[in-house]
Image 1: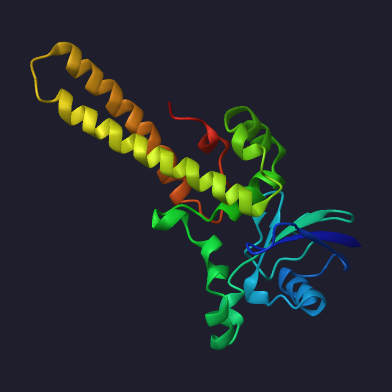
Image 2 (image 1 turned 45 degrees about the vertical axis):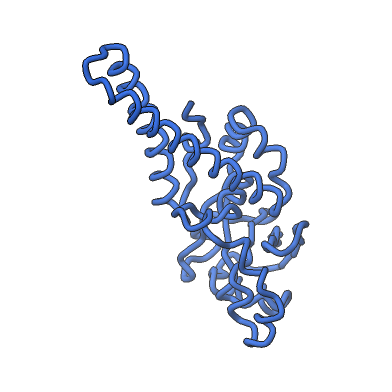
Length: 216
């Protein structure tokens, strides 16, 4: 059977396509070896996705994973710098930058999210309605990462603003209106925290559609 891999790397604006003829009993590990032979991408740098799900069991076969003839897999290339000699890493320090997790805030890297959206039509439709700015750049790994990080930074700033407002309102604990406003702001903040925690604890798994909803 023939499968096609949509290959994306943080350092490339456009994706590449690779078609392979493989038998149904090909394991994920064997597929990665074939990809390495064809593209020189190390097995350890290959992260394969089918319908938005990471294929993290190298012993499973295509048949067991219900991957049939003519299907497309997403291949996200990571940590290519780690497989290069130290001298080459010195010359290309920026290659690692796109794989950082949201500035160290615990978010999965943007490319993981982008691939899961591409592999799940329902989540992609959700993104188009709730986060159109993300949907508009979903075909560009670099632009998607840039827009997503901007959105994450805006959410962090909004959280800080709400907390300051709560502190100001607490200055008069006997103001009933102020206390009601504090309760509402705390509820909004918990919604944002729940979204962030959901993202933080699903770095490699399924990216729930609810995470795309706005918290405001």
